[in-house]
Image (tube, rainbow, N blue to C red; front, side, top):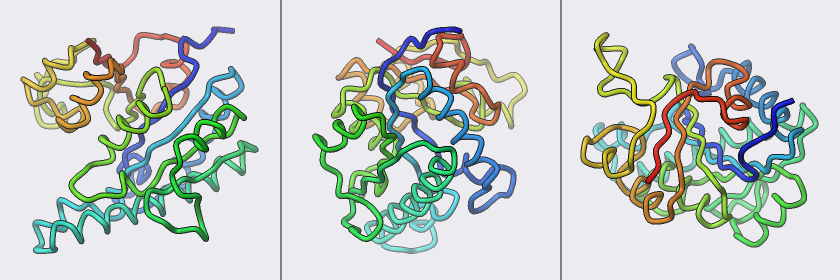
Amino acid sequence: MKKPVFKRVVLKLSGEALQGRQGYGIDYTVTASIARQIKEIKSLGVEVAIVIGGGNIFRGTTGIKKGIDRVNADYMGMLATIINGLALQDALEKEGVFTRVQTAIAMQQIGEPYIRRRAVRHIEKGRVVIFVGGTGSPYFTTDTTAALRASEIGAEVILKATKVDGIYSSDPAKNKNARKFESLRYIDVLKKGLKVMDATATSLCMDNNLPIIVFDLMKEGNIKRVITGEKIGTVVKG
């Protein structure tokens, strides 16, 4: 059995990944697949925290274009991440994986408030911590949340699970000649304006020397492949 190359990771899931091929909402076959894969890497001794987006339910940028106030739109998007977090918690616990939901927006009936020391303690005890509610403040994306939480809890890497198999020079769905990158430097991502993470998140990772691995979530088993060091996806580092 291959050994993991990382001890503590933050898995960044987009809301769109949870919708599968439905186009909207939550595809429970996807959440079940994610839960199985997380259980698999937990069995290897890997400590896991998750940051989840909300774009499958409500995307703040879309709301802004429709005329919704920016701050209200961002808070609506944060609430969508909480729905997704609860769905993922349910799927994980059906697999026998112990979890805690920590929310940056106070909602004590369904999750703990985010407290760094408590989050680290849960992780040390083998629980999967699901961070929801973004940073708790408007104007920040869940990519920035992932970079922030990963830095705070001492994660070794951010695993950014998407619907494509890495980072391309342009959208591969629109340009068949788009080139896939095996590795990139943070500064190249920023200079080229590549849509990996927003600039704030990328800069935070660069400041804290926190690698990002972008890979395809839709192929079951890929999370374990990344964890055990297989060369899939695109690596962003120094």
